[in-house]
Length: 334
Image 1: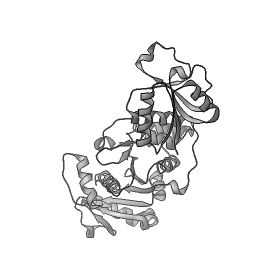
Image 2: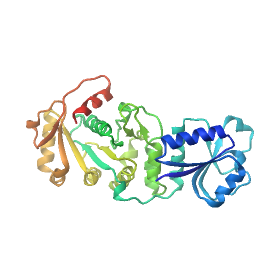
Image 3: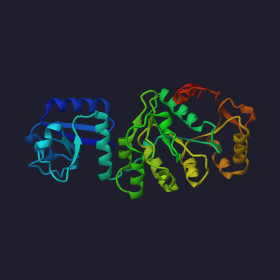
């Protein structure tokens, strides 16, 4: 889905630069039109509908904005002396265009309806899980994500742990994923558009990610149905979706297992990890249900032959002060 955006400003240099960058870097989410006169602006609104518009204060004084779902007032420091119209949100004119796009998408998501998708829009979904903590599950998830990026895929990493690992691997900047959970609770707005708006891209590995929740309970209170809706929306904004799950095997984890196309079950050489994996394989009926799409990943130099089930992949033990360097190195062996 693309947002149909109108840029209506007399500042031709600004509109041309903005249009060029949007067309070059954000054409997957924005379809932009530009006008610089009131006459042209009125003509466009008489004949077309727009999802959003960036408007100079001078453009909206005598105009009916019903043709625009989300009008946004372009604000600059020199506009401080102008009486701003009531009831229209403002947006800073001079800012990074990637941030401006994110703000547009975040606001549009709140006022637009959810669009229906098809299976053709759905990402390939990989869930990464372990019955034991400390086995390097998150490192494996990110290594797998980095490998898919190197294969030419657009990849989004979704961390569903109550205490997020995101800050340890990515620079924390941007809107929290808690805004998505708020929209999930209200069951209104457009989740896919909001996810596109808050998605961040790691400049080194090329992995898309979401900033961590505001607090522990934000993820902890999500139901299995909430998780299903979230994953469905996330799978519509990327080619590959990698889901990092907490260690518990509750109804939410099992919902993810059911939805996933591929499951990486991570273990390591420790007696605790091997014991817990053995119990999951032999005592939990979930494993038999997901066996056909599950790969056992022996991490940290674990011996494939020592695992209680067929091991699909063995990864070495690596040490590095820089956590991201570990998963980027492991990616080559995935």
